[in-house]
Length: 230
Image 1 (cartoon, rainbow, N blue to C red):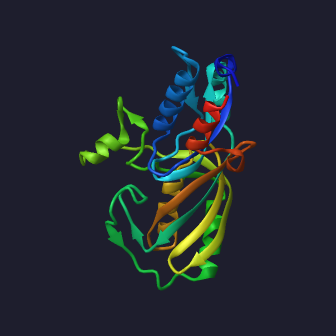
Image 2: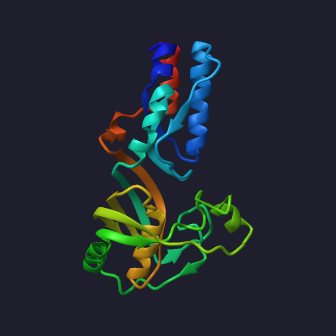
């Protein structure tokens, strides 16, 4: 591809690595494209944030294709991951330490599968306090890190599929198909409560956004290598 291709607009499918923010991926790709083609300025953006502890599909748009970001963001998403029963964390994942433990002796495989049905369809969900959502000009995680209480409103999200794919002791592997704005961390937390226990997310991977599939994505390293050979 040429500089003109990137400026006129490309959709890049990137497999986001662990511990990178979506913003860092965008900045890295923008810098690499500018360096490769000696471009002074180019628009680059992503269609849907992934938490640093999540991996998987990031849809990156360049140039004029950044106008399509809202369209891509609104599409159905699929995730796979693992949740751990019997304990919770303030962030609902492993970003923070376990703060409470709960009994799990009453939880059977049948109950695990049966409980997923309660989350199918439109549900009310509270975003995690450790999230990048803004309230009064500040991100929620900024309030959370200083211990400041903040009133978070619930939102309506839609879950079309919630499938348990493997149960190994307290670790539950799952697949979820959901609408824009769904927090899988909140789903894990609510799922634990519904089991009369607790749960937190230990791994998360985004596998699809609309018709885009993570199987068609490349790593950042591969993208940079391909850029150098263009």
